[in-house]
Image (cartoon, rainbow, N blue to C red; front, side):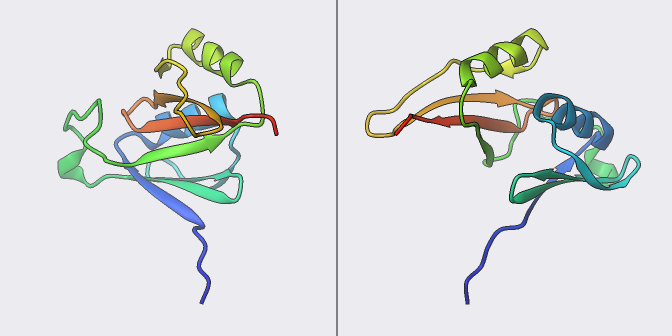
Length: 125
């Protein structure tokens, strides 16, 4: 039976902050929302759901994230310009990079809660 991923759930301390971040910087539309508790954003073929963490975890500081996950977004072109725009907006962004044998330009960044995302731009064919 073939499977496909449809939704990624991130457990976050501030749903509204992250919802605004992903709407502002990536233009992802919100498809579901419960104020301060839950939001679903359409990110291409997959949804990113923001679920407020339980009470004991709301005050823990984990900026720099203890997560071993990375969200990867593909852009067709303009990665360098997008990175510069994010930097101007105060988003933590790392340098552009390439790896031998990988036909993509890449850079990583962090959302306001320290979740790492990667922007990937395939080389022209």
